[in-house]
Length: 231
Image (cartoon, rainbow, N blue to C red):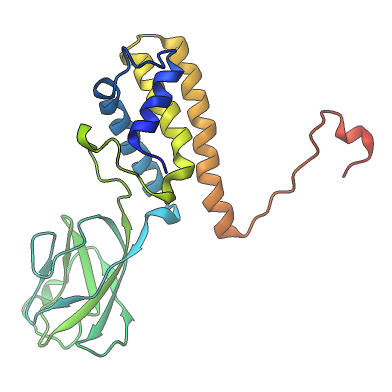
């Protein structure tokens, strides 16, 4: 399984420093964190399935109007962006989608209702009208896939099987940053950036084609296949 240490080993090899005399774990780790944060943002922007998550049931007490990261109930710690909120009467297990608004209408602020019906996502908090009873919520949301920053004591901790296809990109992207800012070698940084872009395209295409049920027919491994009657 991929670990930060294995990616750092790859980075050192890309710098012709397999002994890691200059490109040590301490030196490379800050740039790996930068590359992982950038990858996180790219995946969130492209809604890659790896970032999709559904919360457990949030039991919202009567009269609650704000649900945040520090409230009871609390939002999931890895939540980045809300995709859909569902509500059910307490214990009813009958889920109804709520309508997202920019703001809670002011005429509902002082009126207690039996179901929320609507919600607003403001300042990283869910805002709802006050309800007369307990309401349960489920959230479909975009999650953060990395627990950043990675500390030096955690470089041997496995990232997990779902990150196997990201190792190549992270190695090249981190290598490019190290070439630019440690080695001050713009030519090597550009070459590694090019490799990182190709690896990222593969990493994005694999889940995207899976969602679209797109299958690629491989062409024969010969340059002049068109002249040999292959269609």
